[in-house]
Length: 450
Ligand code: TRP
Image (cartoon, rainbow, N blue to C red; front, side, top):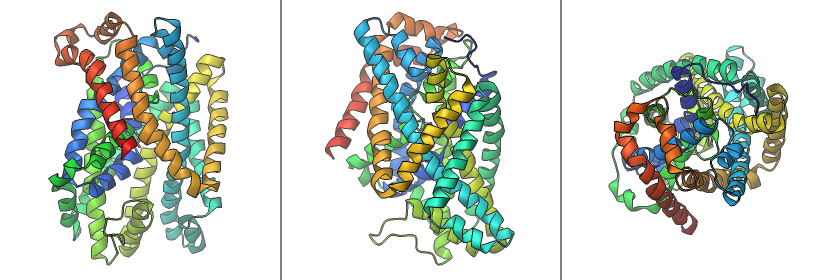
């Protein structure tokens, strides 16, 4: 192992980077639309329960393994395995995680590329370049390839600079900017006519939907995706954490920031949809559901901004800047998974490893763009709905069944002996051992049968 592994220079740096990974398109787009589709407040409630009762314990498993082993997922799972069989399974699980992280990045960067194109669009409009504006907002293969490539170049530039000078520095710059824009937009949208109707759809629970198995599956999938779990992202961030930090506390802060931003995004997106209705736009599909997919972000909201005139152009600029930043702080955390593996297992320099991996991911993204109808949905479903919960389950099993219990307790306590008096210390080890795997299994079985 190279001795010069990166490290986050401060607790705040780690929290901003891990929250930057967690807060992404999944929060700002996925969560509000999922909530609108699945019974509003009932979904929000279920999401919070699952985020803290299932996703948080799974996040802790990743952080603890990462900080103890100071290695990428492939190597980490071998380090904590006591015998040859479990070492082999650990190695395979690690490879599976790297594969899933890379596939998630390959579809995520396509969507992020759309955000970049829509970010450039208001500038083209302001400059009077109407032809360019039309090209930016119409769905062509050339545009998708160009902006996906551009987004991957941004992602690679940050990762090539390393943990402290890339991930940490940019998360500390971009996350505060994101929060300011986010707060400004929410306040602006909430004072527009029609906003309150959106708030009602979002917040008033339709408890009859709590029995719907689809609601629980969607909420769990959303929680796992939102906290970037299963694929080794949080494991590798944990491995860059200094030994003296209090792990359960930093994990809890990241979970809290992530779910709060998701919750707040609902205060932005759903009211905006109903404001759009006031502007005469259709916000329900033919089957009577609220518009939720790409049409919401790339047609309804842009049409709303266009209807607002000059102010609308500015709002569009801020909105798509927000989306692009959220996507970038997440995509860097995905790319770090294959890159850290390549650096540590093949003794490659960070720069070379980053640009090579980035190029490989661009090839996969291009294949998805060219066969969009056949591949996009398939890759999203296979990675996020099935692989992530399954990997989350395997990581919990490794942390609590395979790894020696005394060692994991030692790691939780390390740097923070007071942890021994906390609730976390009493509950987590058995909870993550029995309850988490069982609950994840139940939900997985449920999604396979439904
Ligand atoms: N959590 C991010 C979001 O909500 C996406 C993300 C970043 C992710 N890293 C990940 C998802 C790793 C799965 C795995 O948009």
